[in-house]
Length: 193
Image 1 (cartoon, one colour):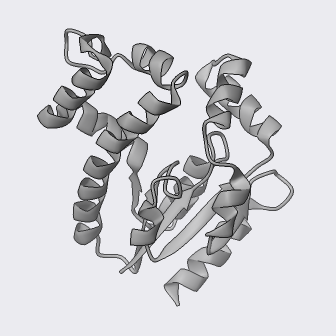
Image 2 (cartoon, one colour):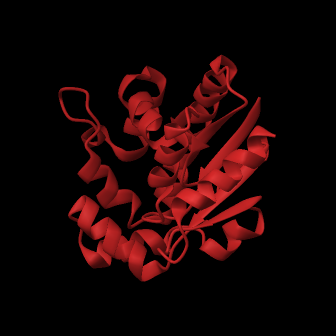
Image 3 (cartoon, one colour):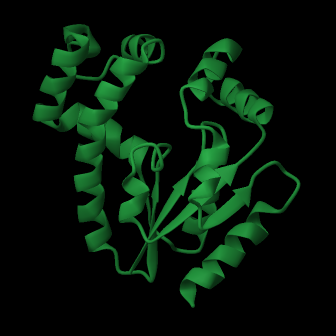
């Protein structure tokens, strides 16, 4: 089975692209969703996060205090790197187990930081989804009801698109200039050969 990664900056349209692959019965592992589950249920990971960010990182009901965590990590690159160093290995182990259970010609792992953390090297194919920065900011502001400057700061904390494109096997342009469906279909056909 071919292990495919789909990545791109925040607001680039990774999830939209993956939903199109799912329409073709290709299974997708959403790393952010699984990371949240692991941060909620993995006792060792929770303990490590509390040690890093303080007990306030979790609500009394055991749920991650996302706004508290975001207020720290998006203003402190070192804390963000430390948190990623805790979460990414747990997600890597979980995704390996998931890939082993798939019975399709290929399966996809969708994650924002595949290039940043080097985990794309454990995959066979890398797809990078791109879109202009201003368009990405507007999408995230609308989707998350976020503050424009906050989204801009988050993008500034991510690896520039040009760096991701350098290691991509395929690039999907999600600017609206080219049909997303036709781009996804073309890649799907190649992967099914």
